[in-house]
Length: 475
Image (tube, rainbow, N blue to C red):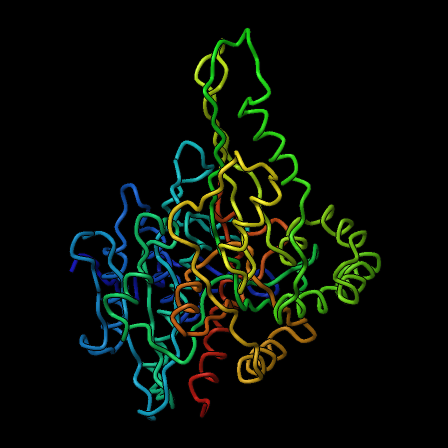
């Protein structure tokens, strides 16, 4: 095993000091020091697609679990035979009720590429500075991966035996699913590893105001379906001195102009309706008025347009969206084009058939000489999981104890997480972290990725408590 578990004494020595209320330096408690060391180790293992190794990170976290009291047989590093660096860690804390389905804690350990010359700091060295942790993966998604792993160790050391088993899955390939995705592979090759009553995953955090006050805690229920379409127009071409009425670039341009002004119908689901209801009470009176107008009348185009201008995400949550992202055509500056193609990227509301969207694009084009075809396999349909009381009540309880008065805001991702694979496989998956960000966010996928130190520590505590409640639930 390549990972080496450092001693707790070294953890305490290298962990950064916290500051007491009067500015007096104070070493972190032993369990926090151990977490900081685990988090640092995980963040500093390079897990990029180009040169990194998820297997090394998975083995390192496995070693932590075993050192924390887990039987070796209760942990596995599962590696695809043809992809030795794309390993995934699974582990289980056994519950007392063998008939109760387990809950699953899911986090991905791969990260987006990062170039040292672009960053202010080395992206693969964890830096604590002015109350923030900086590094690639410091937030996305090694904050949750480290918290889940550390919390399992703390449960084990405390002697906690839940009613239902708690499973852990640290997976590879979330950021590059077209190359390899660990969750998809595990569902196919080791389905028992991810079988659960429901799962907790990335995809939602919390909102801080400009003064650092906790405003809203999000819980994600569902996400849109990703699908690309290729649009093609062709002609025989010819000399540019003899233009015709069948120029494929011009034809496609006219069609794309129509598509740019077309809006798919608005459709609320449980998560997006809950989001609009909650945010309408938290935001400015004018924005709240527009949100309530849309709730009352989903066809209120004027209100939607006002919200869209302020935050494009508010429009994206309401409807399927399709936008041209790439175009390629022509073969010479002095020749009529023979072919032009464009890529249209769609984010489709859950439950809407991909083929229906393809047909609608073709209808909007209004030109039978423009072909519209799906790129790759149809996007994976993943129904939104229900926001039942058994899910919401523990969130409200722990949130109120930690951040009194903070609103609980359901949300639907307009992007994509590994939750789409689990939801499609019948495992309801919720984004829930308890990790709050300011308006600038974590800079995930971008330069100088970061997470507030207090937000990480609070999220770790929140997940520790809420998972205990879920694990002790009878159904």
